[in-house]
Length: 358
Image (cartoon, rainbow, N blue to C red; front, side, top):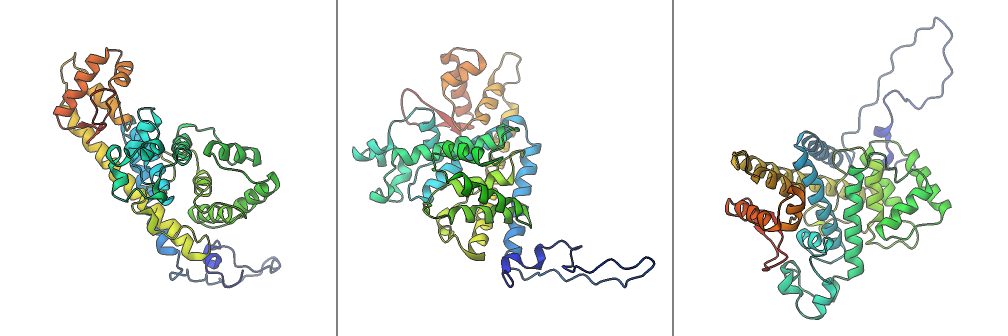
């Protein structure tokens, strides 16, 4: 559309002048054509630069990190993504609590709410008030955990093509617990997403917005943003972060229109990627501090720390299976790391305990 600031000439390749002039006769020398000046005032230029810079830094750090840190970053960010989407849906649950629920180490959040135990068991809900709006429905929490699993899958499976065709999109949406559109409409959306021009982040944002603007879509549905992450790519060291942005609710994500939405989309990605960089530094700091532990040949402390780095939460039984030792020996190793200030117990229980990095 002429005059649309989203599709101004700054997206046009520099070699494309827009002219359809016929070729000059042989031997004709044409005067050089001055290229148009880039539009440095474009409203998406700064948000795009911030988002691209943050995502590039995060990918570079993840690509050069140790395998334990890289795997641990993706695992932790997946639950941050799920918790961020829940916050957008007015449900506040800490990523650790989601990880515990995913492991089957906690019961129903909705049942705990109805019994009046939720604030005591999950303090993160008390900070926002356990009103009707923030009741953590088990269906909603299950969808958040589905999002976390599929988000991890984007980096784990190099051959997965979630946007290959309408059937692949339908399967992806089923994995999220979302309803799909008729195949013809999905094909139309895929065609529009494939025909878009410009930077990949802008294309991903437009594709997400187009999907969420379809009739009958829930404003709090996570499928549009996840499809944008799929468009961003599956062969990357870390999937495209979005919901991990701190205070995700401050962004105008329910408008689904205009340049303002795309600017917030890019700002959300930048904030989420910066949160990932903070998490990366925390993991690498723990890795550095643990290098001096267990220098003897028989010590398993370094292997214990490696196992803790790879997952958000670890139990004695998990560690016992990983290291092929008894649960009692595994618990002793975890206690040594806790005494060294590297990990802490996060359930507050005497049994079925789980540990996470400090």
